[in-house]
Length: 467
Ligand code: UDP
Image 1: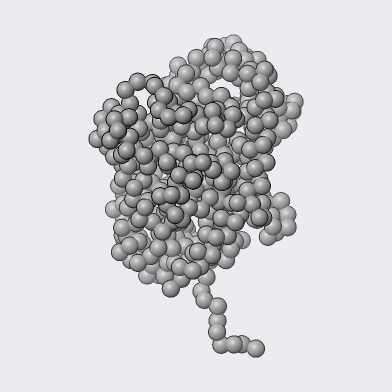
Image 2 (image 1 turned 45 degrees about the horizontal axis):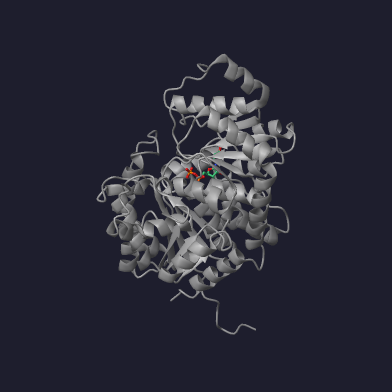
């Protein structure tokens, strides 16, 4: 019998990621998890990102087939010409454009269907002003690890005590050296605009209702304790790529087929190549979606890899190297690569890392790559490029004992030795630590695990936000 009391409308959550590859992909995993919980999702995406997804993936079709009008995209301009690179200084132009349009965007979305909550990228806390003006609760999603967030949070204090700007390469505290600080903190002028931006964004987070991290408690327990003293509502729901797969599997009862939401054409031929290699014999090499390197650095890596004698699978994004003409490399490198290497423009990274032939990962230590490697139990050789990566690589090597940190060195001999340390001489030691972390990560996103429970809390707390 109808009691006359109908269920309240499901919450309407607007996701607002900064429109670069890793942020869009990870935010989409969180959005899909909330959609699975019965929420209505509006996902704001740039025209550029949307057209890339349409061109290279079946994401749009899959989401609309699975959730229909419960998961919709709001496509917005990013202010750049269609062919302009979405990297380096152009990222600031995108930021300015998003900031300029945020007010009208959220007014329009809220007018069309009242918004229960906004989940905004931690790089764009200007959205807190708009949310406050409209009376909509806002949660910040930080796509860096908690160690980096904590470091950013402490920058004003470090300036006050004279620890910043850094003077040399001395130790800071415990195992952090000056060279391990995020690149934005390693500047000479405390008024550096980037540093000031980092400080402002991090402090603004205090005005949000809550803070979400793509990590799990056991991985970052100590630093999370510090963060929680200043931010009472912290949700740790990661590793999200694994979490989404497990929840989807629970709903459909089958291994889920969810694919990476890629901005590039994935070259799957590397899986066929991996299938022919012996177990744990291949080092996978990838520097994420934004890293650039010089021809000299490319040659350093190439010689180091070839001289290590190990097999390698290498992602060379079309825009990775400035000033290198394909085919201009020394013949001995080309020959060795044909014998025991394979190169692609973009790989299905999660699948590659889970492949039994992969024994190590040469990475730029982006937060997503780091988590994906930990989940797969693959030891890392770290060559951090910028931002949080300098800190991530130190934590990988010193706190988690999950790999080795090359830092700024791109010397062929150092690299040759480190590859062999990782894959031969100290192989068992590294596999033992990454194996334990991998198990802990999977436990966290299994029913009853810490990230599973944290996501359930987030879901309930958003439901309670409905007026
Ligand atoms: N990635 C991929 N294929 C590639 C290279 C990278 O799918 O060939 C994905 C990778 O799995 C990760 C993301 O791109 O999820 C890179 O994110 P990360 O945070 O590591 O670095 P960023 O690109 O932000 O520097």
